[in-house]
Image 1: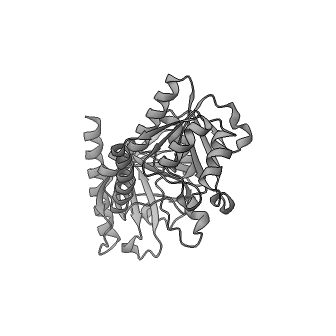
Image 2 (image 1 turned 90 degrees about the vertical axis):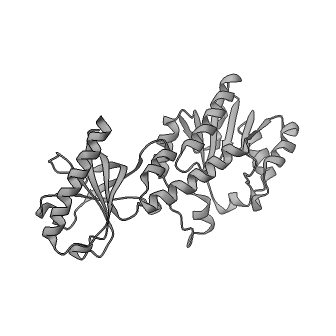
Image 3 (image 1 turned 30 degrees about the vertical axis):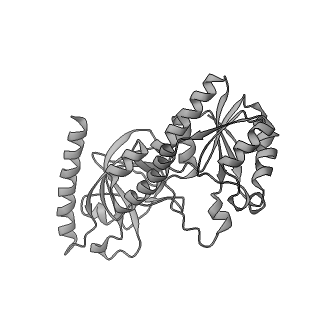
Length: 313
């Protein structure tokens, strides 16, 4: 997949078949749209294109209160878009001045004059441009004038996209990864750097890697213990126990993300780990003492190994 961040070089795309959106999560609804534009592009010997923005428009328009909790970081989104077969992504720098551009100016100056768009694929409820005045109806009016085709994404497909995004976020925040992973079409994942923690897990026989996520808008799962798959920098996968929470048994004051790699020994400090969450094992709980916590962690490990056995058989 080619990624363009400068419109000066976008002219290399042949007969662009384009859709517009944030595509957070690149879930099964988004994947269906990508399949559609890929099919159309193949029929006309063109190329599929997603026009998206960075940073997220709400971060620019509401910097103090955007409240964003995104399913993916920008890099995670780019990786997933490439994985599902999109040919081109235009990541346009979103600014306040760009937000004041009218829908007509956006279509004329960007999609037509610079991109030479062949076909726009868009949902009936998608809006763009200043005051969200751009719509399917406007594109259908402008298409014959500027010489591009407009194809409407069926209402049911759009409903699937909207419902998927909402359900995925709600599921992650509640720890329901059966739902989240089903809509994503893969395991929900995050990456982060291993930093020094309090090393309490090491003292009770469960040395954990304390992970610091670099993005402050990446959605974090509900507090609890999870069965996960951790990928180390050497690209090896390790089945793991993941803990998200405040560690109430040891009077933790800050929320932390810690992962215990089963059957692993080694130094992970300052390395980047990728963690895929398979399912929740239990909610966070305050135990009477550290010994009781250690006993519970042994039970959690047994549960994790049973899950692993079921996955493999």
